[in-house]
Image (cartoon, rainbow, N blue to C red; front, side):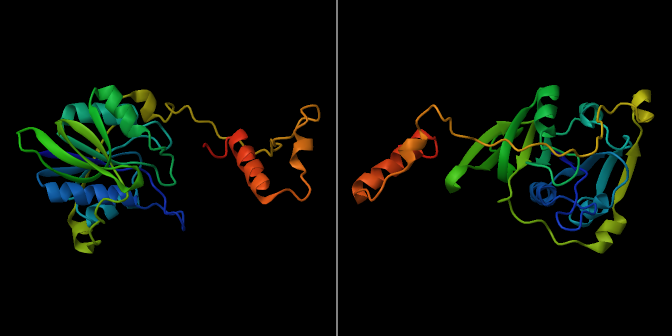
Length: 244
């Protein structure tokens, strides 16, 4: 089985330095347990996070030399079409960089692949060309699904923890750099981002209308406890704070 783990330009939540996202480290751990040919894939400038990925289980990483700040979706889609992995793993959300967490969904749409979200375990299916995936659901529930490959899977924080960092493995791992095919993007002109200085804006606050009569309903002097409880519940329901 060929597995590709997508690596983003993440930032450490405290120091702000370049770092491997924990969810991506957990994705590497899931891929390692599954076995087969495992590679990392990153689009962007060189990053210290790539060496961290090598230190927690990857032995090979493909880096697309895309300009900083550009949208990596097209570069990644072209590379994945050519590589043809069976399983593509990614974190379920970004971590402090320019990543938004939507890239796996955009890739699934562009490549025409199934996407399974919030995986906590992956194993080979009983039939050839399938995998069984355990998903984390709300309120602690779990769901097991069997899907046919190829598939894109996002990893949930409840997945097994990543492997411990090994300095020797990080040194031995290989990072292969691939050029961007689009000459416009090679010159760094493909990004539509625009930076502007922060400008304070007035805060919008809900205000009661003087003509609505709602303000008069807010004052009750020494009501009966049961009546007071009913009024509070009515207020919560009327304002959409709680549904009964």
